[in-house]
Image (spheres, rainbow, N blue to C red):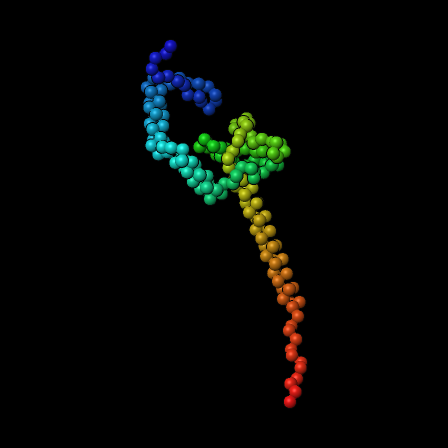
Length: 165
């Protein structure tokens, strides 16, 4: 059995490079310190849930939406998964609700359960333009209906009875 600290780094090409004993020891110490800071910052379930809720709502304020509302036509979008600090490109495959989300990474696909999604910038721009056109059509229709309603109002009849003297 190996004594002390040991491990390896997985490189981008999938190969493994051994860590030196000092690198492994430093990495372990950094992980332990991170765990300690997190325990101090989020000491109980209630505090951790509150932080999770705040993060969720802040991400919505930044334009992210619930993943159940993502495109279901196979087009790509970005996702955030619980427990991940990355933003990943993904698409939905299959018919809702029996399909699945697939995260794309260097030509591979991995099953996913995203929490939030956002459209790619070019798709968001198209969506925004479509919504703006719809708002303008709606406003024009409402203005036309209002003008039509105003034109068809029957003026009040004047009192035609004369006073008898």
